[in-house]
Image (cartoon, rainbow, N blue to C red; front, side, top):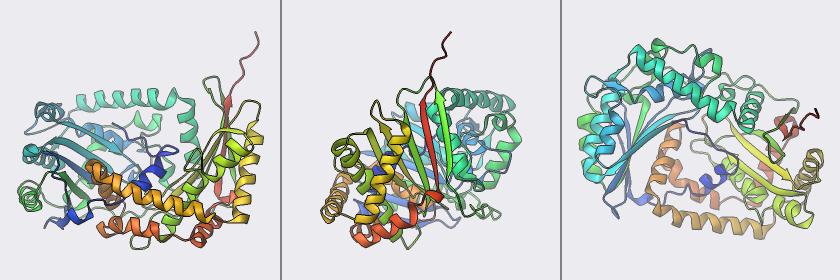
Length: 447
């Protein structure tokens, strides 16, 4: 159930698909206990998605307890006084629905997709476990082993995943964004029942959550159901503020290298610290999103692709993406995989040469207009994915943005100028603010 947060190339597509295509059918309100509710209407099919987002994630964990947010996500599928351990997902499935959950650095989310006439039952179940989770020692012991095995499969047996984890730890020396969401193995092994319950009692409360309901629903009916099921839940008055240790200025490039026999395709990666989307002021984030598309959003028409995959072929793959969906700090990422016969040093030098030329030449006006056209098209395509809209609203609100910010985002993107893009490029594309990594296949030792 762990959410693998924003792999290279995924972030850009999420940015462009982020248009509030059904913005005229979005209703939001807040219950007396602090639960924020967003309703997105889509009456084309009699189905509904319910999502509950808690404004807590891996970056909110206490020192020495890495992985507790993700651990609790698993444990939330155990039981309450009314729902026996392990029955939650079975009940959803019996109704013909599906459910799951995911954890990130800034939030933890739970969702169900069911027939619209089953929404009342889903609210009953979700509200029940918001305040009435029951855990046994056996529950905790069993699920801890599940998570350790998940780490074995997804991280410890995958050299690229290990390298990504180490790179992020090098990028964030002081901020908890450097922690792996799943946790460090030696700390996962020590997590116990009281750790989970303490985290649950501290952060899982209606005034620290967002309810998003999307689909064939009526807002007044959703409000009535939410007041019935979530309304009686008591708020927590002592939720700690998100005052996390911040990253000091980075004054020198950090470099990493890894060689492993399992690596099939060598590559160079680079991540830069970048500003995140800000409530009420998304102009800089929009410029960075456009910059990522210009540099590496397309495998055929982007600046890096044309220069390194076609004009002077040195790469089989290049990319750029911007991940600004965060409470504190975003990342701007570059990657290049060289063609056979081109070393990683040569590939990195070629990529840097293209970046330097871009900073000198500026933005091609035709390319900028093409990207804005793609943004407008994404708004239209976004109308067909109500679950995607639910996720975009929930994620934005969980990191501190507002409904108005989500609805304004497409217009902010359309307003980006070439000057905005170049200002963002000169701000972020500074090697002193980066972590550069080389990953290659280790040579087999000769017997």
